[in-house]
Image (cartoon, rainbow, N blue to C red; front, side):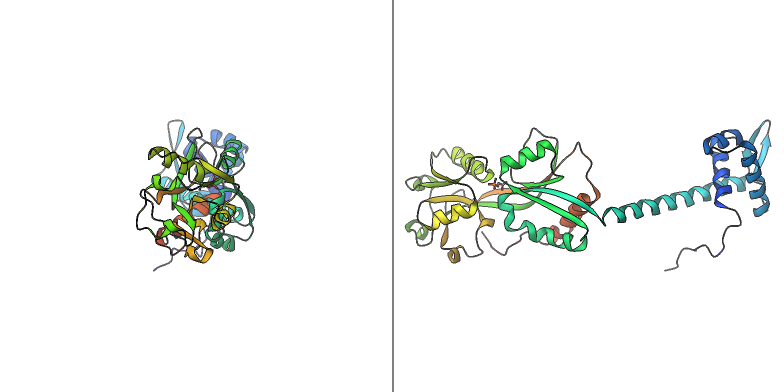
Length: 315
Ligand code: PGA
C-alpha cells in the first residue's frame, strides 16, 4: 500500500499565511477575515502578498470592488481546509487517548450479576488500567434509585424501570429456575407443575429484589398463589437456606454452580421454567456517556457477540 505523502515537500507558505488566506476566501474580504482573526487589516494584506510571492501564484483577482479567488486560489483554499480537517481529527484522537488514560467509570449492578460481571469487565480493566471502575452492587430497587439520582453511567439489570429515559442493551440471558435441596423427592420427577410445589415453603429474596419481582409476576401469570415463608437478603443466603432444607426458591441460573449438585442443590423441572429473562445494560439518554463508558460498551458488544454465555451450562 502506498503511504500518503508526508511533509517532505514542505509548503513554502506558513500556516499563519494559509489561515489568513482561507479566511479571506471564506468570508469574502480582507476586512472581515482580519476581524475574525483579530488581526489588523494591513497584516492580512501583507500575509496574502507574501503567500502569493512564496508560491509564485496569483491567488485573487478583483472583480469590481470585490476580491475573488482565482481557480488556483480556490484549489489552495480546499487544500487548506483538508489540512484543517486532518488536524482536527488528530486533536480529537489525542483528546480521546488522553481521556482513556485516566478517569473513573461508575457502574451499578444488581446483585445476581456479581457472579459474572467482574469477569466481563476484566479485559477492559486490564486494557485501561488508569480508569478506576467503581462497581456498586445492590438489589433492583436500589439500582433504580441510583439511576434516578444519576449516580452511575451504566447499570446492569433485568427489569429496567419505564419512568426514566433509558437506552438499553440486552446483553445476556438470565434464566430463572426453581431450586430444591439435592435429593429432594421432587427432584426425581420428570416434569412438575408449579401448583404442585406450593405445599413446600417458598424462600424468597428480600423486597426490592428483581428476582423476587420476576418470580411473583410468573406465579401471578400462571394463577398460582405461593406465599413466601421467609425472605433472605442475598442469593447466597437463599441457597444456604434451600440446602438446609428450609424450602424451595426461584433463583437465577447464574447464581448456581455449573453442576448444582456440587453445591447440594437441584434444579426442578417445572413447567414454564426456566423463566427466560434478560439482563440489560442501561444508561440515561438525557446524559452524555463519557468516553470510558462508550469504550466499555463497544468492548462488551464486540466480545459478547462471540461469547453469549459466561458459563458452559445448558439449562
Ligand atoms: P436482584 O437482581 O434480585 O439482585 O435485584 C435482579 C436482576 O437480576 O435484575
